[in-house]
Amino acid sequence: MKTLLLAALLAPQLAFAAPSPRYLPQHDAMITYRSTGSDPRVPSSLSVRYSADLGRIRIEGVPLGYLLVDQPQERVELVMPQTRLVIQLPPGGGITDGFILGPGLSFTAAGNDRVLGRSCTLYDVTTARNRAQGRVCLTPDGLLLRGEGRGRDGRTASIEAVSVAVAAQPVGLFSPPDGYRIMALPQ
Image (cartoon, rainbow, N blue to C red; front, side):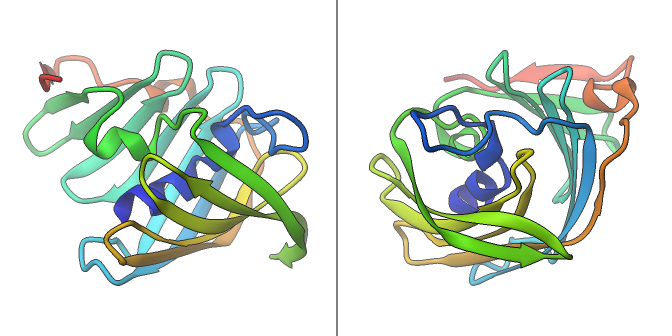
């Protein structure tokens, strides 16, 4: 289920034939989400920063540290400040399925809604590979305001924006800190 929750967070990163959500958020932004789920590992709050120019995402509130997602390079890194370690996660498997999503995901427009006074389009989302399904609500400029879903294991999760700030994000937040050890997980 974590995969679908994380897929919902990153749904704006996908490019599909029209009609489809925006590929990347059009502007830098920081969104704080309230999250719930049947898996006790789902954090109750997530802070997500987007860098539109870099095509990168920073997700804070995950266990052990924070995640850095480099969409153009299809790279996900777990940064663990307490141990000064960066773990590079392999693409195409495990946890990265929720970050680097492929063409197996399909979006179907399902109406309109409002979250925090912002208009968003509802999309039903399905993926054959993970056999997961859900619904996301995306603004015209590519910001995820709400997501919910059920994974192939039957676990459920949902997120909803509780604050949105469209503002420039410091570039340094989207790279691992200097001096950290780097460990790449095998495929």
